[in-house]
Each structure stands twice: as C-alpha cells, then as structure tokens.
Image (cartoon, rainbow, N blue to C red; front, side, top):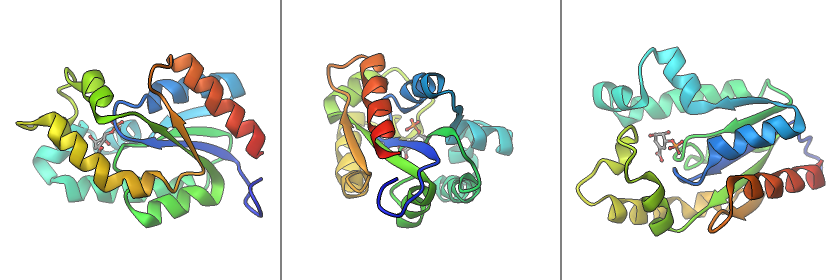
Length: 175
Ligand code: S3P
C-alpha cells in the first residue's frame, strides 16, 4: 500500500529502449503475476503492427488505442504491465495506472537509448532523419511525466536481471 492506494499490479513506464518488456517479463515470472504489454495488446486488437497503425491511421489514433487499453487495465490484478513509451505522457493515463498499480519508471540517457534502439526499424519514432536528436527532444518533453512515477529506476550499466530485481524489491516494499 502507498497511503490509501491498493497496489494490485505493477506498471512499468519509461522511454523506448529502457527495457520495460524484458524487465516486465522477468519481474512477472519472479512474483508469479501475468505479463501484459500494451503495445502487443493494441497490435492484437487492431490486427496490425504499431508501425502500420502510425502509417495508416496516424499517431492520434494510436494514442486513442492506448487510452482505451489503460481504462481496461483498471480491472486487472496480479499483472505486470509494460506500457508503450508515450503512454504516460497523458495525465489521465498516468492517474488511472496509479489507482491500481505501483508505477515504476525505467530510466536511461538519450545516448544509451539510441544505442539500444538504433537498429529497431519497428519503432516509428526513431525512424527519423536524426533519431538521437528526436530521442533527446521527446525525452525532454516526457521527463515531467516520467518523474511522476512512484519509483524511478536507472537502467544504465545494469543488466536486465539486476533492474528486474530492483523493481521487484520496490514492489514488495510498496505492498
Ligand atoms: C512509442 C513507444 C513504443 C510504441 C510506439 C510509440 C513512444 O513503445 O508504443 O512506437 O511514443 O515512445 P516502446 O516504448 O515499447 O518501444
């Protein structure tokens, strides 16, 4: 519990390339929770990839998908939720997650993020002429939202397993 909040789930937020899905899977295994990745849920529901949604329907349509999925998450329990990098950059999404989950933000510098995602063509927001600059800009815009997470975990120079251990430790403390 944090104050009067009942923590049923664990939500991982943070920029792309911070390891939300990989860390989330490890954490879910460790605490025996289900694992859910909002991007994968959206792809399954929409019947197309995130890149296709961005290309065919635009980013606004993708953000609508995210809002709908976030509303549904409030009904879940014992779930580790990995979110898309832009999902918490919307006050309502973040507030909704906080009603049922401990919100943990995974953090990395723009340079580290770029090194991790540079060869990932499935991420539309880094397929830009100057991806590092785009990452710097987006991270600066989103930082105020990410900082509203309950816990901030630095992922620099740490293995996925180490990060997952830290996340689980924070989750157990909060319950
Ligand atoms: C996005 C991050 C992606 C995905 C979409 C938009 C973003 O998720 O939701 O491409 O706005 O940062 P990951 O953070 O899992 O890469």
